[in-house]
Image (tube, rainbow, N blue to C red; front, side):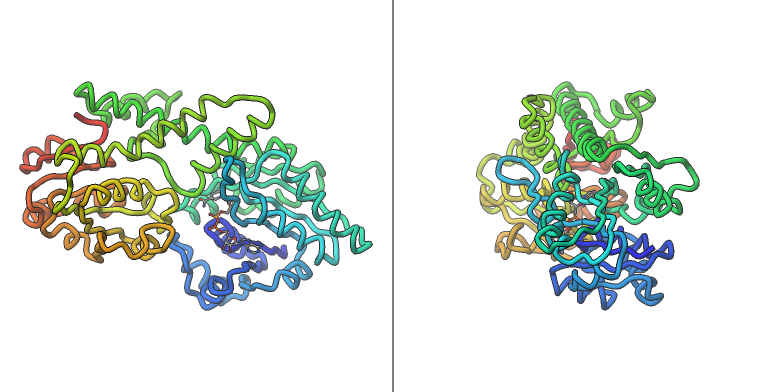
Length: 442
Ligand SMILES: NC(=O)c1ccc[n+]([C@@H]2O[C@H](COP(=O)([O-])OP(=O)(O)OC[C@H]3O[C@@H](n4cnc5c(N)ncnc54)[C@H](O)[C@@H]3O)[C@@H](O)[C@H]2O)c1
């Protein structure tokens, strides 16, 4: 099939590359010329496992291309995916301006019937709104092409996005026309043929599925963080609690971790957006409001543990920090808990020596830490600990799991670790002579 994907962020670039990998001819469009140039020359400007190789392979095969020329992409393709950002507005609602900009452009530029697919996470009713927007533009031109707007929410997770797309837990298609559902089924068949993971429904229901999934997962994290905090106060170990809880199939083993609060571009904004949608329908989504409140509080737990140990005045103190990205496997810093934790320490006079395997370049952007003289970055994770008064682990990168503790002990001013991800065994840490403090444990 001939596909255009508009927006080459985490979702758009992975969607485009994976469809190309299955033999479709895909053009990815972005308004950011620099990003397009980087992709087109095979230099993937974001960190996502397996994406570099896939982009390179499909560029070479000419199954994948990148452009800023939206008009040409709309003219030459039959299916147009919208995968632009939907950041939160002040009131928590999803900002649909990018989605509607693209819809307007489609209406202004299309020259034949199109299937337009909303892959961006958008509130209930957006498929209708996108269709209306396209039809209005067509009417202005005196044209009347057939337009089908499909809701196809994306469930990939950053860090495992390529794998998630290639073997999806489910593909959700919201469309009214059975012919369009068939076309989408055919497009996704190579990804879903092993198991029946294709769910078709009406567009509004499909739009809700995405928010429902993210709100459920975010609530699961907040429940676990709350339980972890109770464990820490009660002298229990949440790591054992979650393992035993997870053995109940109704609870499940997946997504049972405690940590310094969820971040990223999806959970915070999608929970806010569903709360706002509910409000617009006259419903007060209290449970999801609490999910966000609990998460906001959780972001301060690790820095408070440091303050409890060192006092409010952290002048002259240095902390070695491992992990800046909002989770492992990505360079994405959006709403990362590391921002709150590090800023809380700096605010009290501390200096930070930070290491992250992928996110350090991103952390230096103006919207995150900028050129902050209180933060020094280290390519070598051990060098970030040299002369530090304690070590903090914020992101659960695999390479932090079994480090050289003898080396760590030598480098730190004193053997003290604040573990935000329950990565290490308290008993072992004690045997190694560390003063070990962890979220979810006393
Ligand atoms: N990141 C995730 O893990 C994830 C997972 C599932 C769903 N989603 C949803 O997918 C959507 C995209 O997320 P993302 O993380 O890929 O966003 P992103 O911010 O990484 O990328 C969005 C891209 O769209 C481009 N863009 C914006 N307006 C444009 C226009 N008019 N024409 C062409 N390009 C335009 C931007 O330049 C940017 O490159 C969001 O709605 C998000 O909620 C994200």
